[in-house]
Image (cartoon, rainbow, N blue to C red; front, side, top):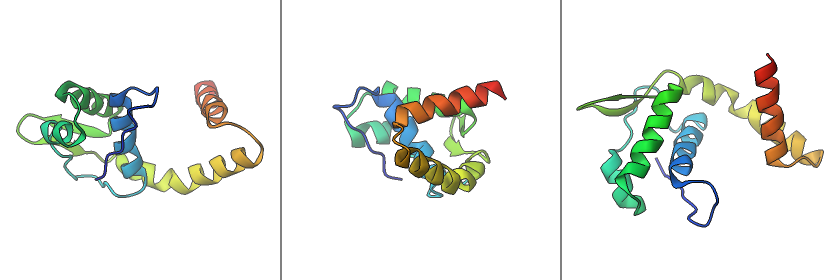
Length: 118
């Protein structure tokens, strides 16, 4: 698992960590049952506060993507499998939106609105 952070980004660091884990799950690099590195190890490797990584892991837990247990750490749940199945559809959608001149923010807003209406 390779976590990517952009310190110059307006996106909070915890959100970037969580997004990186989601992206790895969607790409099939993380599968159900895989253990995430300890929050301490990630924090040390990235040079960020431990609580930043813990907040990212808690967000992923709240989404159902990881299960956190004392002594076991963070483990990827079965919710990761559907992400990988949707990846090709998401790539096609983003390419179509780009061809139509839509920004990623506009596409994200459209997806959220559509999901809310269903």
